[in-house]
Length: 152
View (spheres, one colour):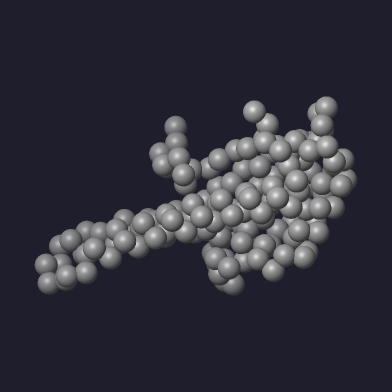
């Protein structure tokens, strides 16, 4: 059961390519190496991850990919064609930030002298928009760089 709204919930996509597995791996490594906005690496023979540089803190309690607002996990495998499974999901930093905002709501609601209670829902909406936009950007960047086609 998924409690998150669909735009911010983890999403899984299956893509195919006419390129060989070695060419896809080389393209991914080139994308990671040449991009100023992406960080990532292969963590096994056929699995990799990527996340944006611009929304990731230099120091974090979480692992590198989990400290980002969103990250992309990918797995390359061969069937009749080369297949790439792409999972785009929120990082733990996203959940942690939402939890802090939710826990702060009672403080603002019960402090009758405050007039800035509207800031919490506004900040949550902004965080959701940033997370959704980051997921879309990551997926589109990888798909366009690798020239993949969506399987139906």
